[in-house]
Amino acid sequence: MNHLLHRALRPLAWAGTALALAAGALTPAAAQGIPAAYAEVALPFYTPPHLSAGLVTQWYGTNAAAFAGSAQALIGGWQQYCAGQGAIGGVQQRWRAAATDWERLSAVALGPLVERRSMRLLDFQPLRPAAVRKAITTAPRDLRAMERVGAPAKGFPALEWLLWTEPAAPNTPACSYALMAAREVHAEAQALQQAFAQLAQTPWDEDESEVAPNLMAEFINQWIGGLERLRWQQMEKPVRSQGKAAAPDYARSASQTSLPSWRAQWSALQALAVHRGAAVPVPGKDIVPIELYLRGRGLNDLAQQWVDAVQAADQAMAQLQSTDKEAVLQAVKALNQVKQQMQDKVAPALQVNIGFSDADGD
Image (cartoon, rainbow, N blue to C red; front, side, top):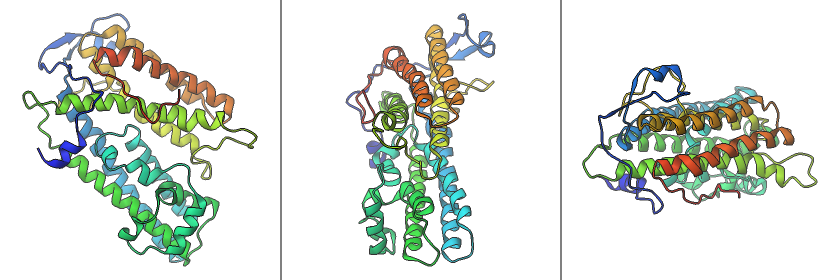
C-alpha cells in the first residue's frame, strides 16, 4: 500500500477497531416500523469493507468529479468576464454551482479532504477583506505564487467578495486575481478527484487489514463533525454572537446563499445517514447509509430511531424558509437531536469512539 494511502487512512487514535469483518451473512429485516421495502427481504450483513468501497467510489468519486467540472466552468466564466466578453451574472451563477458541488463533497471531510486541508484552502472563514486587497496588489501570476497568499484571502469566500461585495471590473488587477484564485480552486478540485480515484483502488477486503475499519471510524466521526460544522459554526454560532449587529454574520451572506449552502450540506449528510432509494445497496459496490448498516446487523429498532431523528431534522430544514434567527434556532434544535442520537446510541452500537472535533460548539 502506497505512502499516500497510508497517510489518508492513518489509524485514528480515537477510532474503534472492534468492528466485525465477517461477510456474507444475512439478517432478516423484520422489526416493527421498518419501511415496507425492507420488511420482506434479507439485508446483507454489511461490513466495513462494504461501506468503505461504496463510500469512496460512489460518493466521493462521483462528487469529486462533479466539483472538478464546475470548478473548470468557473474558470471559463472568469476568463470571459475579465476579458470584457460577458456579464458578471454569468460568473456568479457558475460560482454558485461550484460552491454547491464543493459543499456536497466536503460535508463529510474524509481522507484526502482532511490530509490536504482542503477546507482551509478553499473555504476559510471568516474572510479578511484587507488580506484580499493586499493579495490583489501582489498580483500572483501562477499557482506557485498563490501558495504565498494566505487562506483568508482566497477560495470561495474571496471569490464571493469579488463578485458581490466589491465586484471586480473587467481588465483590472482585481479581476486578474479572481481568475487566479479560481484556477487554484480548480487545481485543488482536480487533486481531490485524483486522490479519491487512487483511494478507490484500495483492496478493502484484505485479511486482517485495519484500513476499512479505520476508514469507517473516520467516516462516523467526520459525519458528526460535518453536522456540527453546519449546526454550530454556520447556523447557531452567528446567531448567538450577533450582538448589536443588524443581522447574524452567516457565511455566504454576500451572495445571499447561506440557506442554499445549509441545504446542500444537510442533503449530503442525510444521503449518507438514511436510505431513500428502493433498491438494497449491493455490498462493496453501492453506498451503504448508516441506517442500512445498522439494519443489516439486526439493529432494527435503533435504525428506526435514527431514521426518525434524521427525518425530523429534514422536516425542520425544509421548513426553514429564511435566515431569520428564531427560525434558524428551531432547525438547530432538530439537528442537535440527530447529534445526540449519533453520540449516545449509534456510534456505540457500531463500536466507534467519537473524538472531539474542531466543529464542536458545546
